[in-house]
Length: 331
Image 1 (cartoon, rainbow, N blue to C red):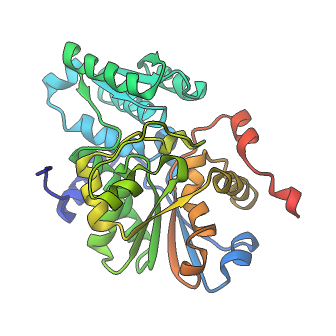
Image 2: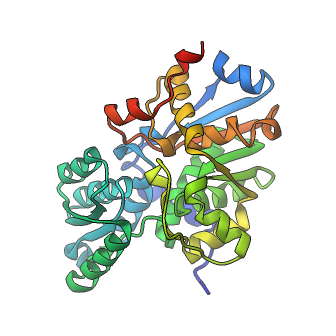
């Protein structure tokens, strides 16, 4: 049983003040062109939270940096460690560099080389292992033997308070939303944003979205307990957390109205659509929320004022070209 208290609005506001000057207040863009109007109608307002413009290319910096800034000087001297397929490792590497300490990050060998290189460019030592399971084990060893602070990718109050600052900004930039759509990997982003949204806009519906091949939160909310997967099967490696964790799951359980599932093909098509329409080249996870709007939530949210987050864009040109569906073929 997890006894960590839920984030309060005051705590979220304090977290945003702590991060002030270190992070970008990412913009909200009203999406109004023919591509979205043809699908959702002129009566639907789609307000895109463009978190891909955050430092390091994703929302992950908020939680990683808040963890680092909350450490004692003694803990900072020992450094940070993290496990990640890429985005969280990049954020922890950046945060460590920013606060003047070191980072040792563990990544699966399948991680995109551009993400590994970003970590190294920020000064982190990178350790590549065969799979995510081994990565978590190696990070645990580093934490115990070297005394480094383990910055969890989606669990823990500081991590959640960091992601909650996205929801705080969003509510200030786009009040009176009818619904928001948030991707779920381990659940840290969704837990934080959902908490902030429900505190500030209690009547706003919150939809989480997962790939069919990485549906740990969906399964957890059905069963009422944390669940894990023997194998993750999705192109969205940023959404491929193999398990859920108690604190983030408990917040999703309380503040998320529903989790919907999407196919990889829907993300691929949406990657192409976002590039064609908004000139955004996003990773599959960055297209997930929009894919849910176009797919399972289309009819339910037509005519509503809907917030959709574009959460990240750490992808190389060749991988993007290989994955994105070319919508010009349909014209």
